[in-house]
Length: 148
Image (cartoon, rainbow, N blue to C red; front, side, top):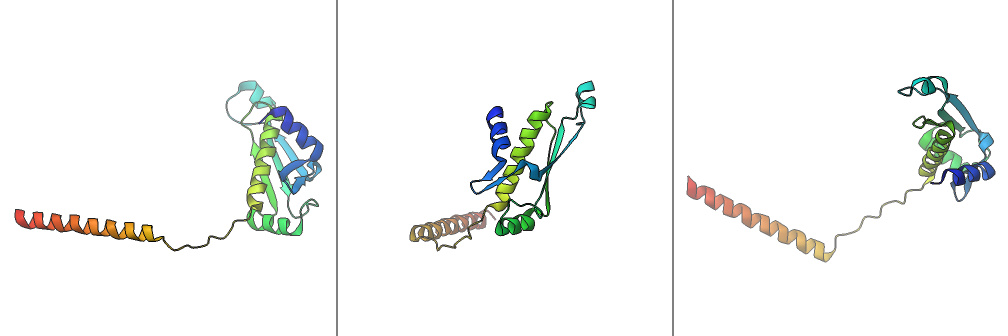
């Protein structure tokens, strides 16, 4: 992922989630705080930790089915946090990517599984394995009976 390409495309068209969905950046709510952990004065004084929120219920960019699916799977507000990097700009990119991935995952429609019957070869293999196990156990029993 190139840092300059993603940031520019995100600024010009909004956050691209899927081919059919781009969220304008003005629908996202940002919050910046100091990130905890090691880092000395830089970590204590710089607001590099990024939190981005997306309100599903009030979004104008979602269609009715998209909104319903997101509400069902993620709830009314989607929140993503990033504070791993020392740079606020990099944390913003990471948070945007995570938000896009989470929304895309929730919008993905799972195809229902169609049960299939085992093939003739699979049935034959299973029966052959059963016969093989049976013979092995029979041989163990004969060996055990002879040892007593």
